[in-house]
Each structure stands twice: as structure tokens, then as C-alpha cells.
Image (cartoon, rainbow, N blue to C red; front, side):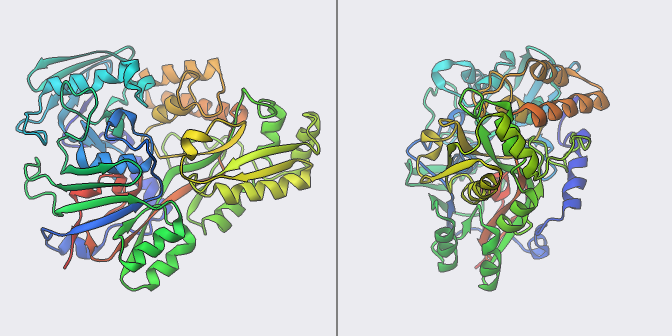
Length: 513
């Protein structure tokens, strides 16, 4: 197996699936014909920030972090519009057995401080995820790295504990961006298109053009300022007033208002993004299987899609693989709104009339409205849910997974292995519901090393069934990514791994005069 200038073909089917889902924007024809213009400054606003904002890739957890890292750092690979991994700092990744990988690196690349990029930097960057003191968000994924060594100045040999055909996709995650060897607390010294000039966690980030960027002529912009505006209405107002030129997480209800301005537009992309209701297995009554089943049958998925997202969503089924993914299992029975069944489970759990708090926040997209819908249907079935709306600021550190019943918001990942490893494996740091399933864990390990794609699909299919039947997360819909932007910005195209072109926008866009 090899990855070089062409992306891996085995997942090219994703491109067809997304095309079939119907993109609102496929990149503008005039952008193809236009000549990129050098210069200009823009301000962009995301939906969340906190004092935990970071310049350390290993610690990144929120969209704002991913946007910041995408401007300053680069990884060995990055996902393309079909979610295939393509080379970035790596020239190629090759393996005969999917366990021992040879990674050949680009030459002539420099860090912002002028230092040469070499294999030693890759070794340092990947191995630091295995150090407990670093606090890497992908420590559980990096546990697969049995050894990482420089076999040449521009070549790395990475040996895995077990075979994993998804390594090129794994290395495309923002947390695996490459930092300079010896930097224990990275502060933005990357090889990316922009360099840090100001960083104040929870307030703003300012970057300026890296004149020594490895791609000739890029980036086009001189300066980008990144801020956060948690409230969506305020974020849209800032865009329309000209205070920002790009925003993410646009509510579908705002699309018409943005487009009617005449000088702004939206880019919407079907994706695997979802907001889930988390029912902790170690809490009460959420640890009761009857409670979990009752809640799943209180979710009116078509209503969530229609009322909350104005159709810009795909119906989900309480497992994290979207229907347009090639590994999706269509044979898992769809859970539907069923008040009689929910009422039966509530009675069996002894929870009729019991008051149970549910925590929601604007930080988890759509969760406030979802909580209200659940409260209404729960009352009809005899379950009293007390909705606690909490501020977006600090939600992820103060409330997420810290109560028996909260909401999460999970960004798209390119492979089932990453989704399952990060959010459903028993030992995962982000195992939101805290569930444990030994067979699921065994299947996860087996699927990684399975060379037969048909058998691999069967394994992932069974895992989806297990999560659907026994997992403590209710996933109503997969949410389309909607960015708003000033029409003077050119070069944008949808990449379904995240907003702002999968967080890689900065080297591709320019500002038309």
C-alpha cells in the first residue's frame, strides 16, 4: 500500500456519496477563471473560544483551535474534498504490510524561525503524543505507534503495534501537525502559510503571511485575525456589518438573510458533524438501559432536521457513521419516534414522573432546541426533563460529560477507525458516555488490520449495530457545515471534514479588490 501524489483510491467512493447528497456550493466557476490577487487582510469568527485555546497541536480540541493550527502548522497529510488523505509535508507513505510504514518527507521546507524541516522533527512531533505530561487529545491513537525513528534526514520509519491501513488518514488529524524538535510547549513555530504575531487565549489570534512558505506564491493574504463570537445571530450580524469577512456554524435560518444582503454568500456541505445527547453509563438514571432506550425513542429526527436545520442535515441513527460513507451499514434498523415504546421503557426503569436535569448550550449546535423537543415528548411519555441552558463559554470544560445527561458536538473524522477509537473505544479519553463493550473493542482492533475491504465493511457494520443497540449516545442527524463569507473572498471550496475548507482555507483564498 502506498500514498503519494495521488490520494488513496479505496475511499474515493465518498466523493460520489457527497455529490449525491447535494452540495449547496461546489466552488465558484469564476474562482477557477480568476487570477488570485496578492494582499489584503480579513477577520474571521468562529463559534467558540476559551482560556484553554492553544498553539500546541496535541492539545487542540475545538474548531477555533483547528482553524488556528491550520494557519500556522502543517501535517504529514491532509484530507481532500473526498476525505482521502493526500501528501502535505510527506511526499509519500508506503507499507507492504500496513504495520511498518516508510514516510518520505519534502525537502527544502523551513519552520517560521528559519530552521530546516527534517525527519527529527517528525519523530519528536509524533512521539510526544505518547508522553502523559503532554496531555495529547490523541494519546489513545498514538498508542499504536510502537516506534518512530529517522531512517534518513528526510525519511521516517513508523512501526505500529498492529497493522492499520488508515495510518495516512490518521496522520491528517490536526493534533498530529508537525512542531520543531525540542519544543516541549509549542507556541506556533510551524511550517504553515502564516506565522503568529499575536495570541491571546479566549480573545484573538493574529497571523501574518509566511514569506518562506513551501508553496510558491502562497499564501495570498497578508494578514488574518481570528476571533470568536459564540452567539450565532451576533456572528451573522458581524459578517453583514463588515466586521468579519468569514464566519462558521451558520444556522440554516440565517441563510436567506445572508444571501439577501447581495454582498455575502454561504457555502454548505453535507458532513459527518453531529450533536449527540450523552447518557453517562456511570450516572443515574442514565446508566439504566431502559432509560437509554426510552430517550432514543423520544427523538423526532425528521422534526430536528426540518425545524432546527431547515433540511440541511441527514437523518442519523444513534451511531456515528453517516449514510453517505462507504462503510455505512444500511441494515441497522432505523430508530423512530415511538411514545408508546418510550413510555414502556420509562415505566420499566421506574422513572415515571421523576424529574431529571438535562444540560444544553449554544456551544453544542442545536442542543438547546433539541433539549426543548425532548422535554416536550418526554412529558407525553411520563418523563420529566428539566432543561438547564448554560453559557457557551466554558461549556466543554465545565459541563460536557460532567453530568449524567449532557450534549456533545463531534466534528467529522475521515475514517470509522478514528471515530470509534476516539469516542467509543472503552479506554478513549473522549468516550462520552463512558460505556464499555469488549466485543466492540475486539472488532475495532480486527478491522484495522483487515486487508479485505468487504470483510472490513462487515466488521464496521457490526460495530455500528452494537453502538446503535447498546451505546449511550443518541444521534438525531448529521449536520451540514455552513460557512458565511464576503463575496470578495475567492478560492473557497467545500471539504467535509470541517468548516472553512476543513480548516485549511488560509493558503487557498484571496481577497478580490
